Length: 183
Image (tube, rainbow, N blue to C red; front, side, top):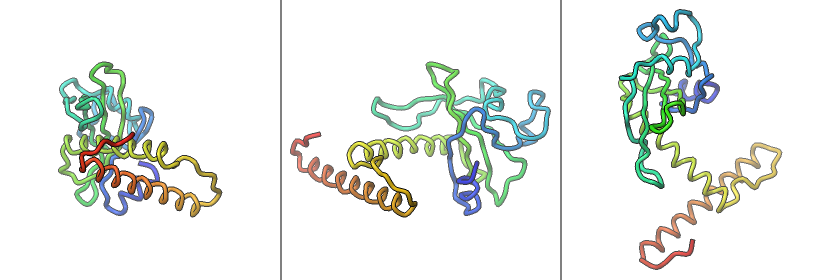
C-alpha cells in the first residue's frame, strides 16, 4: 500500500488506493493461491487479476457520472496472509465493459466483512474528489502555486479549496432561487 497506506492501516482507517498492474501488493492468501501462482513472495496485481475465473467478475455501478451510471466489471482478490484486528486487504480490479483489456487496479484495506459493492462505492467516490480538484484548478487557481516550503503549499491549497467551497455555496444558493446562473 505504500507509505500512505501503511499510515492509514496503522491508524485503523479503511482505504481504497490507486494501484497499477505492476504493483506488488503483498503475498496472496493461501486459499487464493493456485497453480498459476506457485511461488511465495509478491505477485503483481496484473498477474493476480489475469488468473481470475470469468465468474469472479461482477457488473456494478461506480455511481452516476456526467453521462449516467458508470458501469464496469469488478473483482477483488484477498491479499496478505494475515488479517489484523479483523481487517483485511484486497486488490480491487475495475474492467471496462467495452474493452476488457482496460483494467484499473486499487489496493484496499478495511473490515473483514467488507462487501465488493462497498469497495466499488468507495472507489467510485474517488472520481467525485478528482472532479472537485479539477474544478478547483480551473476556477480557483489550485495548480497556480510557486512555493518552496510545505507550509506555503498547504496554505495555498487550503485557501484555494476554501474559495471553491464558497463559490459552490453561492452558486447553490442562486440556483435555489430559480434565477439563471452564468457559467
